Image (cartoon, rainbow, N blue to C red; front, side):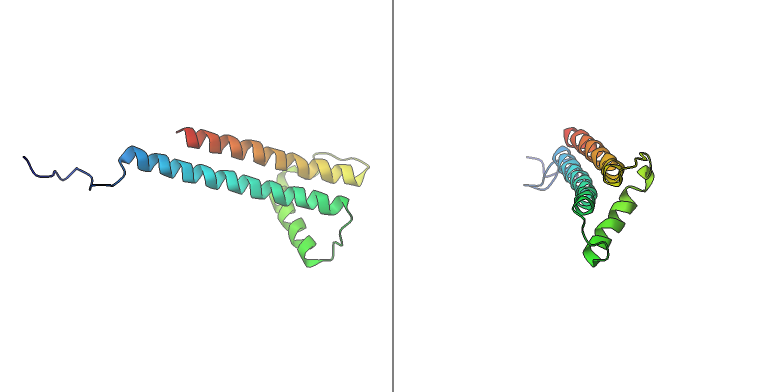
Length: 112
Protein backbone atom coordinates (compact mmCIF):
# COMPACT_ATOMS: atom_id res chain seq x y z
CA UNK A 1 0.00 0.00 0.00
CA UNK A 2 1.51 3.31 -1.04
CA UNK A 3 2.07 6.01 1.58
CA UNK A 4 0.08 9.25 1.81
CA UNK A 5 0.63 11.77 -0.95
CA UNK A 6 1.58 15.38 -0.36
CA UNK A 7 -1.72 16.56 -1.83
CA UNK A 8 -3.92 14.39 0.36
CA UNK A 9 -5.70 16.40 3.07
CA UNK A 10 -5.17 15.30 6.64
CA UNK A 11 -7.83 12.94 7.98
CA UNK A 12 -10.93 14.82 9.15
CA UNK A 13 -9.98 18.02 7.32
CA UNK A 14 -12.74 19.60 5.21
CA UNK A 15 -12.30 19.36 1.49
CA UNK A 16 -11.66 22.48 -0.57
CA UNK A 17 -15.30 22.63 -1.76
CA UNK A 18 -16.60 22.46 1.81
CA UNK A 19 -14.24 25.23 2.93
CA UNK A 20 -15.32 27.42 0.01
CA UNK A 21 -18.99 26.88 0.92
CA UNK A 22 -18.30 27.71 4.55
CA UNK A 23 -16.51 30.93 3.58
CA UNK A 24 -19.34 31.90 1.23
CA UNK A 25 -21.91 31.30 3.97
CA UNK A 26 -19.96 33.38 6.49
CA UNK A 27 -19.60 36.19 3.95
CA UNK A 28 -23.31 35.98 3.14
CA UNK A 29 -24.16 36.18 6.84
CA UNK A 30 -21.91 39.23 7.26
CA UNK A 31 -23.51 41.03 4.29
CA UNK A 32 -26.99 40.10 5.55
CA UNK A 33 -26.19 41.38 9.05
CA UNK A 34 -24.66 44.66 7.85
CA UNK A 35 -27.72 45.35 5.67
CA UNK A 36 -30.02 44.63 8.63
CA UNK A 37 -28.05 46.92 10.96
CA UNK A 38 -28.12 49.75 8.42
CA UNK A 39 -31.88 49.37 8.00
CA UNK A 40 -32.39 49.28 11.78
CA UNK A 41 -30.53 52.59 12.25
CA UNK A 42 -32.54 54.23 9.47
CA UNK A 43 -35.82 52.85 10.79
CA UNK A 44 -34.94 53.84 14.34
CA UNK A 45 -34.25 57.41 13.26
CA UNK A 46 -37.60 57.57 11.44
CA UNK A 47 -39.34 56.27 14.56
CA UNK A 48 -37.51 58.67 16.90
CA UNK A 49 -38.27 61.61 14.63
CA UNK A 50 -41.95 60.78 14.20
CA UNK A 51 -42.36 60.27 17.95
CA UNK A 52 -40.75 63.65 18.64
CA UNK A 53 -37.68 62.40 20.49
CA UNK A 54 -35.44 65.02 22.12
CA UNK A 55 -32.86 65.77 19.41
CA UNK A 56 -30.48 67.11 22.03
CA UNK A 57 -30.20 63.66 23.63
CA UNK A 58 -26.86 61.90 23.03
CA UNK A 59 -28.46 58.64 21.88
CA UNK A 60 -30.85 60.42 19.52
CA UNK A 61 -27.94 62.48 18.13
CA UNK A 62 -25.95 59.27 17.56
CA UNK A 63 -28.82 57.55 15.76
CA UNK A 64 -29.49 60.67 13.67
CA UNK A 65 -25.81 61.04 12.74
CA UNK A 66 -25.56 57.38 11.77
CA UNK A 67 -28.77 57.58 9.74
CA UNK A 68 -27.50 60.72 7.99
CA UNK A 69 -24.26 58.95 7.14
CA UNK A 70 -26.10 55.93 5.76
CA UNK A 71 -28.62 58.01 3.80
CA UNK A 72 -26.37 60.81 2.52
CA UNK A 73 -27.06 59.80 -1.06
CA UNK A 74 -30.82 59.99 -0.71
CA UNK A 75 -31.17 63.28 1.14
CA UNK A 76 -33.79 65.55 -0.41
CA UNK A 77 -34.90 63.10 -3.08
CA UNK A 78 -38.37 63.84 -1.78
CA UNK A 79 -39.17 67.44 -0.85
CA UNK A 80 -42.56 67.54 0.81
CA UNK A 81 -44.10 70.27 2.89
CA UNK A 82 -44.88 67.74 5.60
CA UNK A 83 -41.62 67.21 7.48
CA UNK A 84 -42.60 63.80 8.87
CA UNK A 85 -43.41 62.43 5.43
CA UNK A 86 -40.15 63.84 4.06
CA UNK A 87 -38.13 62.10 6.79
CA UNK A 88 -40.07 58.87 6.29
CA UNK A 89 -39.40 58.78 2.55
CA UNK A 90 -35.81 60.12 2.54
CA UNK A 91 -34.69 57.63 5.20
CA UNK A 92 -37.11 54.82 4.40
CA UNK A 93 -35.98 54.50 0.78
CA UNK A 94 -32.34 53.77 1.65
CA UNK A 95 -33.45 51.35 4.39
CA UNK A 96 -35.48 49.43 1.84
CA UNK A 97 -32.66 49.49 -0.72
CA UNK A 98 -30.09 48.30 1.84
CA UNK A 99 -32.37 45.41 2.78
CA UNK A 100 -33.14 44.40 -0.80
CA UNK A 101 -29.57 44.68 -2.07
CA UNK A 102 -27.96 43.22 1.06
CA UNK A 103 -30.28 40.24 1.24
CA UNK A 104 -30.02 39.71 -2.51
CA UNK A 105 -26.23 39.63 -2.36
CA UNK A 106 -26.33 37.35 0.68
CA UNK A 107 -28.69 34.94 -1.08
CA UNK A 108 -26.46 34.88 -4.14
CA UNK A 109 -23.35 34.25 -2.03
CA UNK A 110 -24.93 31.44 -0.04
CA UNK A 111 -25.92 29.67 -3.28
CA UNK A 112 -22.37 29.83 -4.61
